[in-house]
Length: 344
Image 1 (cartoon, one colour):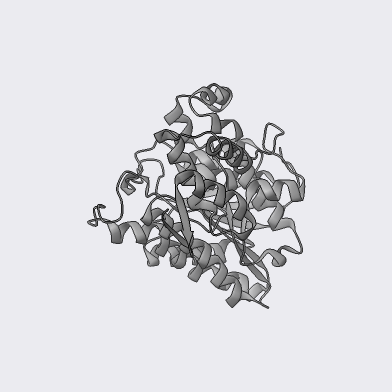
Image 2 (cartoon, one colour; image 1 turned 90 degrees about the vertical axis):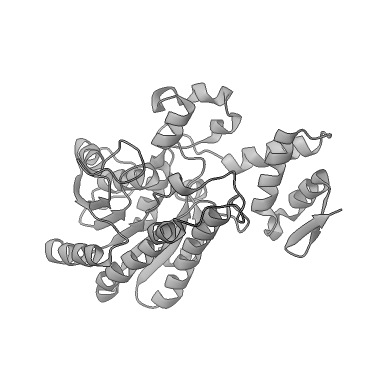
């Protein structure tokens, strides 16, 4: 078995949304560390899941098997409570326990139009979108947490995007990701003294299958895309966030991290693991350095203004980033007014 870090032999995990991206990386890392992994989602052989992507659960399970691990693919629509309840009953019957639950369900890329502001978005599919990206997580936690609470142990991980308190650039996207972080926080409060830990975890600039396709590269030659996007230099494979989950699952004091939002590369530095290429990427550091340099060289063109504004939105609520936020606001010609801003 090829693994880096702790041994999870004897543990049982379930990764909801294990078809691709962060979910697949997490499932693979757990399997390679020795856990038995139930991999769920909608995209299985012969059953496209609505993302217009070729990846399937069966491929994820095959990759885990090739590394010497054991995984089970179960096609489940996590918005359908009866299917989730049936899966929970199956895990209870077959494994008798659940040690790690990872909620990495997404599937909303086709309905997020990044070019539209909230008063311009098409609301026709909004209920289905929120069911898929948010309600599905609540349903899943509702039916699997009892297995953990009864045993007095376990780890629940909500996979989100962004470890900052600020804005993520699209109202619906931000609403969902911020709500998932809050879900982890609320669960942690209610799970206090049960022995079960709930927390949120964010990858950085993820070299997912979709991102690699978009940039026209493969993992083997990913650096060729840095010329198109210099920020890609500090990107990471889905294995990094997977190894973060493994480290958390093996940490006997992970309860100290309950309710908080954690960043995969920060955990890599804390626990001493790396990405598959031996690196620990620092995308936030690169982003900060770039926007600081742009802000210091007016006048700003549209591209610079966009990047500075994007970073300002992300960090302006963080007291530790106050200095940079003020520098970016000044470059944009804005003055801060409470949590927001207004024309100078």
